[in-house]
Image (cartoon, rainbow, N blue to C red; front, side, top):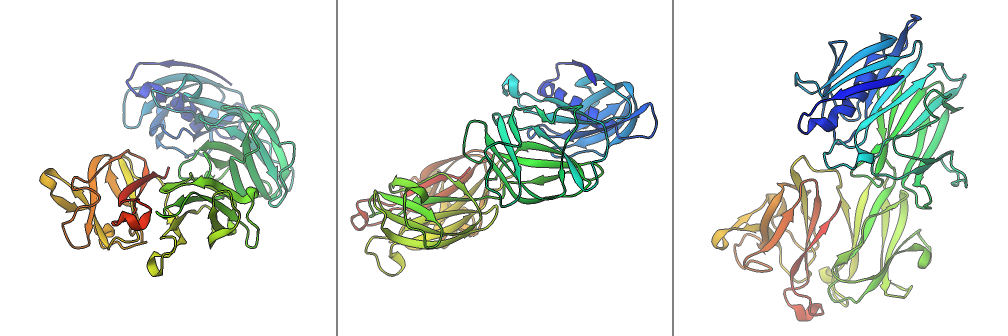
Length: 475
């Protein structure tokens, strides 16, 4: 199969040309019984490319194709075919390509890469073409071909094993670069017996797992193209887009949970944090943070789903000061924070508190904000914005009457921009804390924030740590 194409300057859509080529090609063909025909489908695997319309020999073949969509195979005459690609709803072509198709083959064309005008050339959007014989797998087997379609991820090693198998020394597919296919186009696909498998990936040269599917079914007699695509809101930077011949594409995300530990106990010195199996002794092997100080949290770490015990010990020690059980479900995110006061009693007692996190991306142009009251001697508060002349406005009922150590009921969706935020005693307008002018909070589109009220109204009770806002960027 060969391509020739012509692009035209068309503002930001110029970078969409390659996706158009990819989508166009894949939208035209699918297995046919006619000797001069061939089969073609397209997979939209560019995470930041908008929807496109595709014309084949002048006729609209697809309208508004979007990320993670795969067309069905369609039959088309082999040989030269004209493909035009337009931004959805536009009559102007940004791609005018000639595609040469060999007869009696299955062609899958994937649009991969970034459509951003600032993308590095090596990561820019473009087509990946896969030619396959179209032969069915041997009885009981599944046909698999893997595509590296995540532009920001380096070369990867891929391991396909039984669900509970230890990771072998040698990968099933090794050192696979971006835009590459394994087995290569026009070569026989990999065949394995149908059944339950686990797909893991790591960056070539690293021992850290970058993706873990958990147990997944690869059904007998299926014919699959599996693309590693960019992922958001996941324990991994990639997800797997599975496109079966004769079926709809679906996504497999990393099954691992994510957990972070934070030190928000204002009169406790530096600590080490641990996450181990129930009954497991604290050691360097299960230490997840060393020398953590108030008021900070470590980044989220990916862990296998299951039951754990989270523990905190004074720095460089292995005797737990406080512990809490933590059951982490697949694809769940949780924050385990040390809160309260050393030698505190009742509600202000030192302990570990678990907060479930929602790391799904916010709507376009928006940020997500969650508020947690972690100041042990402060009363219940309302979150407010501070405007001109010091006027205060309640942000949302979900952040009203928030008492220690509770989090707001869900996340607020707020437009990107800068605002001055503060808290006031619940139902009141004064005093405004931590300062009368509030704290400047800049929200970036696509970001998720946890805003924690930390420290104490009476700093002498909290190791000198006064009431303040601590802002965590969660993604």
